[in-house]
Image 1: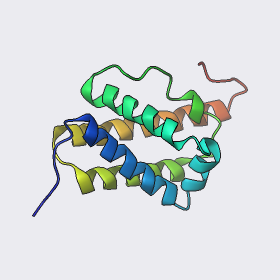
Image 2 (image 1 turned 60 degrees about the horizontal axis):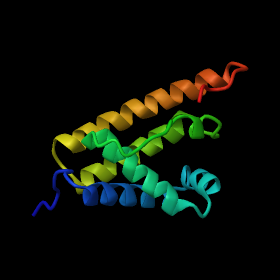
Image 3 (image 1 turned 135 degrees about the vertical axis):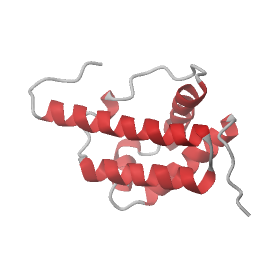
Image 4 (image 1 turned 180 degrees about the vertical axis):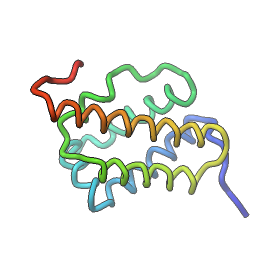
Length: 131
């Protein structure tokens, strides 16, 4: 029996974010990077991610911020983003189905491509990202 459901509530967002970041933290490639930056502030980071995805998927503007700058100086490349996306897609496929799940995958893909492009851009130039 398929227990997957549509992403419809904040509880769904929390389940998605918590499950996803649980996988991130266990991943040998990207987990140590996240843990070194976030440290003991995981609850704060998760709350920010709940608001981010609530804003992105539900159009309820609870996230205010600039998502790129905290990532600009991370020691990451395409392999890291591919790993992040693999975990994101796997988590969505494991838990959810429907239009919002497909949108979350699409938005994750676009965000990863944009972040990687911007990181590559700033690495090759002596400028700092606009905040």
